[in-house]
Length: 92
Image (cartoon, rainbow, N blue to C red):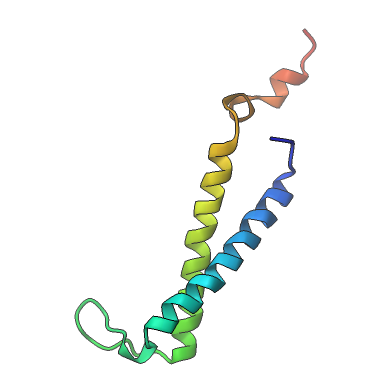
C-alpha cells in the first residue's frame, strides 16, 4: 500500500462513508415511515420527519466512517503501524 497523507486518507474515508450513508438512508426510509418510529419505551418520537432523516443520516455517516477507517487501518502492514519516524530518521 503506497504512502497516503493523513488528509487524503481522511477525505477518502469520509467520502466513501458519505456515499454509503446516502444509500442506507434511501434503503431504510423506503421501508420505514418516520411517523411510525417509537422510542424503546413505546412513546412516539416527537421530531419532524426532516429531523429524523437528518439524525439518521448523521448516524449512518458516522458508523460507516468508523467502519471504513477500521478497514483502512487493517490494510496497513505491521511495519507501517509500528514504524517510528523519529527513530528511522536518526543516523545509524
